[in-house]
Length: 635
Image (tube, rainbow, N blue to C red; front, top):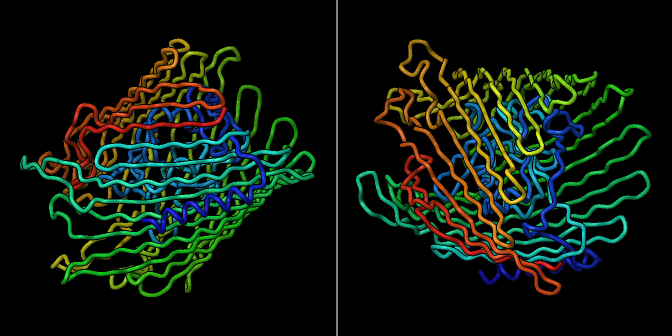
């Protein structure tokens, strides 16, 4: 503990000294939060208002983060996006959207992939929000723009940039030994700006819960401790706009196990380090963007059981390069074309050997504006080279956005496209079970909707249909059921409607809600009892209402989350299901000013109605509890 705190302190000090500029703004007190511009790059790789995009896009910024009391990417997505977040208690958190699995939604940092080639996903509970300024949530396939894994959606995380002239510190305490401390300095001088920030968090997690038989228990072996640091620097010189950033995340967690088997003394250590660079070069009417990243990950898993215990450490390396040229072709057409290259490797005792792959891709997308019509064509080709074969995928997309009348803030959206996911190293090379002959998973999708972007009310409704094929599932290879291996067997179909509304009643009151209805069924084998039955663990209905009110210096934010019944078996029997649950939260904050400082004191209540619920079977969620947060920054 002391060694880690010293390491964090020295890392922050070194970053600050090398910044060479005065401290500047890092956090935002709610009353001074500026409006996030309605700009997205997720739809076409070019600046496009969300209302003008061909697909549903949700922009989440500092205002939403503060209102929900979120601390991680998983928290804010769970509270204010249409995505369903699978939370294994207070541990692993992944995305499931439009009938897809965790690996079917891309997670990107400034346009570059976050997930590694071994697992094909990333634990979003490990990503603290001080690393990012905002995020864009893209509903529907994104492979035509960003490549692999973009089958059902994408989360585009914008790395924090800093600037201004402020420093910020925050601390938070809560139930079951919860403690969070963070600090940040943003700086700027002339054309150069940046920031440095760090966060430390710990908790015991030993909350009480009730078993399925009604027995009162307390979670054991649930301690966790982690810290993270980030630095970013950007500036302009001549025709170049340069940016560099890095972060390091270090977490140690004890694993309580499921409620069925209890704690076994398991532990897990997660370490992630990432460096990324970007150079945007102005070339007359166009621009060339060059970017690259290097990500190193390490996961150690310890099970002290005397019979089947293990102590394994796995390491992954992921890197990528990208060149994108953006050119306005006249007054009606913008074209973006580019190429990517990357490398992924993993060294893990559970794999047959150290494995690696090279990947490459080429893409072109465009935005055509013809009066009230906007057309978004795009196509991308990707190739993944292993030791003895090459996997490839072609991902087309055609999007449309129409404004029926100039004076009417109504936009009609339509989009058809495809997506793919390459089998992970675990799928192909898991010792004794992997299947090296697996093919990429495929998706074909179509959606359409209406977007009303009024001054006081913003409303959007989208309907979609998606068909997945070649989905990889692990099945038993013999009658004993002890040997399992992955195969390209599953076919699923997903239909759904997504609705969102936000109304600013006046300057002090905002109300809104998100609703997702989904009918995702298995279409793999007509002779199977699971045929045309709902896919396990996915709710048919997901509802998220919220209210934000201001009374002078006092703010009140209320939010809720309803999850419909989730079946736990392919047969979709009610006896084998997780009960519906409505979970509510609240926050009361007070903003103050004192000389050169401003601050916010907040009380955050989670699970306000003390609902006994689980999101994933066997992993209870915490009962009602509260946190007290204090943020202070220079003015």
